[in-house]
Length: 386
Image 1 (cartoon, helix red, strand yellow):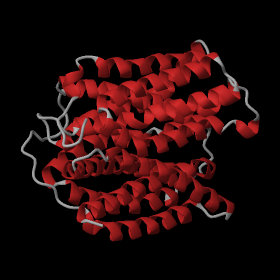
Image 2: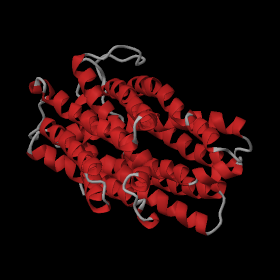
Image 3: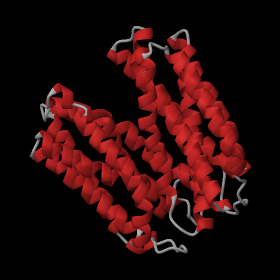
């Protein structure tokens, strides 16, 4: 295995570690709710503090990576991220849990920006598209984290013990892989805190990523509800739509790089928007278990490529350093993930859940339209065909 391949494996291990920590936190949310005797409304309010920290952390992360390089931010962020996870389980009150969640959210997006910056640098050195495979490892870690969480619950172990075990696994990954995370060459492009208007290219990429993240967030939060209330699936099949979506999203990220190398990143994004539209339309028009499941499979396949390819294009901005460009795109796109699920609920209250999903289907066409307009602006020269 050559040095580039070793670096790819090591960087993939860091993506896996971050996904594992996040999934481990999510797996024990019901236990956190029970521990503090929270109502659904109180839990919803508590859960908002993690994305709040994510939003706060995005511009800081872009600045830090540009100032100090992605390696040092990855190493400091990884250690802090692993150590903070047990603090969530150990928090004795919601008053102490809130700042921990804010800090955890900040660290999560710091890792997001620094890891993707390192990945883009490696992608350029390898001369081929590899970013999506890293996001696939993050998604695969989600399944692993959920499985470990189920085992911990079965064994009757508290979230604090569960999170401490995961932190231990995380430190093994960090220590094993850290030697292959390098300091990239200093960027000559513009840096600074990300509190500025993106240029036309980054704005368009950000809107594409926004719509992709909105679809992704809605599927995360509403797939089960849709199968229960609209598809009216048997209780044993309520999670089927979510599993179908997650499965093809994770698998799709492992094939996105090869498909993008064979065709172009723009064409893959265009087709992705169509897949999401067709999948959701099938689920809305034919809300049966079989067809809705197939539709959700298509949605997962469509969503898979949006963020990694958007990041790959944004990281090659001629006006901003890769870390700053990524933070700009991430800041805008993250609001899609944050605002999408509540918007679904609001429209469902006014009309019904099928109308909400139909709206998301139409918005997916915006991904195709935005990536089709003045197509040439997206064609960033690379060694491989893109």
